[in-house]
Image 1 (cartoon, helix red, strand yellow):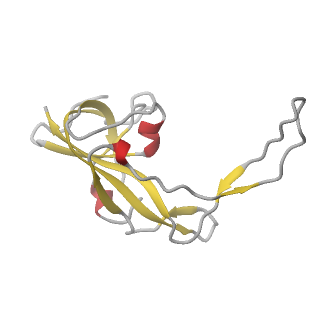
Image 2: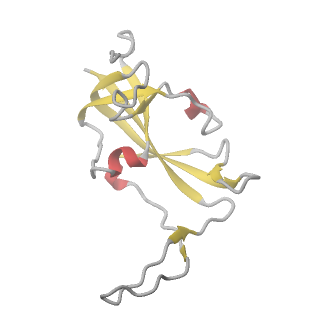
Length: 158
């Protein structure tokens, strides 16, 4: 069921993943009036205060059957990039190093500095009829690499 957040709060904070905006090339800037669907943020990802952020923007929250979706609407008062450091778990999966998140204040998500990883390429396929060969590429990672983990967006409710 879609609802509105608690009416007693004037400012709301929500996390926003990079894919939430990048999929459609959207930009959020200070001063923008927004109306976006959000789901409760379950925490446990950043290992710090950001895990206490109550909401995560999710345009498909209703479609995925997420419980307690809300509409967050109002004027954006701040945008901050969430910069984290990566660590490799024992099972080989790369994840955010707990407690490494740092906020970088921005005027707009368009101002975000994005780390560009070096790519390790796998073997190329045999050339096709037009002579094109293909290969799968993977981001080269090292312990402590910087990662853009999204944004923290603050909204003053309308």
